[in-house]
Structure formats: structure tokens, C-alpha cells
Amino acid sequence: MKVNLNTVITDFYGEVLPRAYFGFPSGVPTDLRYVVVTVLGTAFRDEVNLAPVEKIGRYKLAIKIMDANTEVDLVAEEVALIKKLVGKWTTPLVVGQVDCLLESKPTGISVKKE
Image (cartoon, rainbow, N blue to C red; front, side):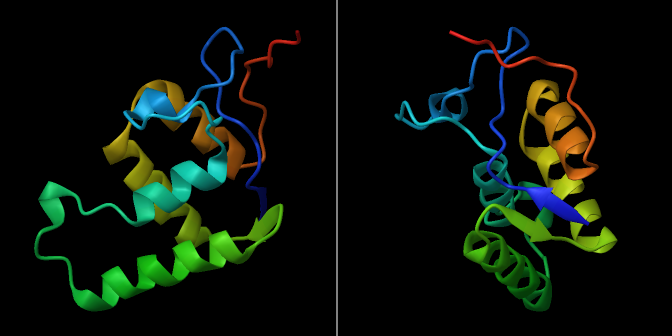
């Protein structure tokens, strides 16, 4: 399934969510690529015994996503893994949008026009 990685994540009012939302000092907008690569590279507390082969798989998926231009073709297993990790990592605001974007569905939030 093709996924647009450059889609920005917004708040419920349609304002672009800066990366500072996640605690990083930056005014850079948060896009789907940033969220996905971040969760793939995160070591979760409940995964301290994660097998090296699974860690390598996440690393390779992150590289695949970083190497893609605008879109990446993901298989169902990759989408399921990303959804699981995003769900562990962040708030319903972001989890809901990522779920919609990975399924090529509208998020229901309109980006505010200036």
C-alpha cells in the first residue's frame, strides 16, 4: 500500500503540529515520516528483551522510509507494526491521524488555511 510520508500532523483545530509537541525544541512541522521513523527507532520499556533480529527489522524499515521520496510502499505487516508502535508512543491525536494516513483515509481534520 502506498503511503504519503510528507503529510503533516495537525492539532484538532487544523494547526500544524510542531515537533516541539513531542518535546523536541524545533519549529519544524511534524510529518508522517518523522512520527514513523521515530517510533521505529524507539526502545520501549516493555521491549527490553526484544530480539536483535526484530530490532534490525525495525532499523531496515526506518531506512526504507527515510530513503523514500514522497511515498513508500508498505506491506500489511509493516503497517501493523507501525500502528502498534505509534499507539505505544504518543497521544490519541497523533495515533488517530497516523492510523487514517496509513490506511489512505481522511483524518477528518482540515488543515487551517492562513
